[in-house]
Amino acid sequence: MSFPEEEAFNEYQLAKNMAAKIGAEFHSVTCDPETLIENTEESLWVSELPFINFHGVGKFILSRLARTQVTVVLTGEGSDELFLGYVVFQPGKGDASDQMMDRLKPTKPPRGRTVRRTIRALGFLPMSEYAITLSTR
Image (cartoon, rainbow, N blue to C red):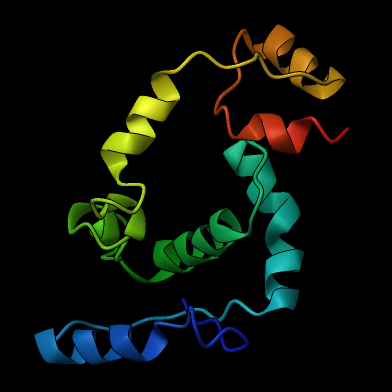
């Protein structure tokens, strides 16, 4: 995926170079703000979950391209987690073990009408992080 308006997150050239280096066929999609907005509703429909950013919309756009071009998609998804690339995994900087221990501590149950309706409809809240998003309504 190419993010031409967000150079800090645009890994297009790195992906293209890697594909050339290993001899892989390279395909890409551009995810500019207009494209993300245009695909938000359909992405929500197929994911059946609320989201707080456009990552899922970008992946939806990429999966639609993949369906027309290739059988298998090789992405970098999960490599930051696997190779401990995020600061959250680095000791002394809020590493993963600290994060896990924080999640085990008792917390106040999520509040808000939309949160209660979601829990009533599903029997659970899919991700506790959604409570913040859902609590605003």
